[in-house]
Length: 239
Image: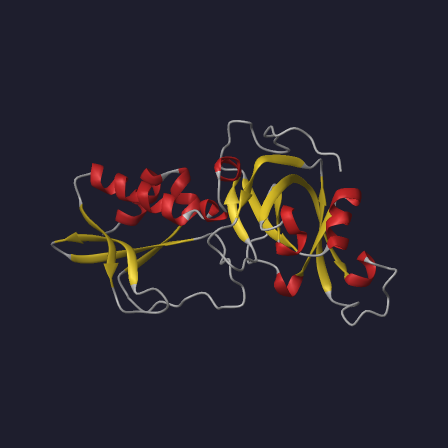
């Protein structure tokens, strides 16, 4: 296996753009792993694809099936092109497969870039997809560091605090799948609860939580990390 050195490369973005999107996907098949290494492509069934698949880089989490090199992200690669094909078109040597006519995304990849050290997984027993940024990928020590919500919450809290507004973290509510709001703005006109959402839900076997509270605002974590002041301006507009 030939990998290039652990230096960030950018296929489409300016090198100063730390917000370059990265899709982290799981690989648990040695056959698929060899295709990535030798043929430079990865497939995702459309039925199992994350809600937001557009990214400039793909990082692959290798499961425990890979032994000593498993339960970690060892490399990533730029995504050169996307294709929508049937399984039979992707793997013509398996025309009679039960899913031969199902649709798949084919992600064509550039050179593989080694992560040194690799990103290990010590907290999450099961993963599917994670949507993150190149900056977090290159700085993460554990898979848990890739999720954007915690960092986004901190930046929004700081932006609110610097404006002299009353704010609380982890405000208790009773709704949907999240018993606490990430933040609550408190003022004479009442409470505004704020929920910070990952760009896509990492566990696709569970539906995204629903919300019923009227005075609630939902903020995309990536947008918040890019420009917390602009997001806060939007939150406060017309309120």
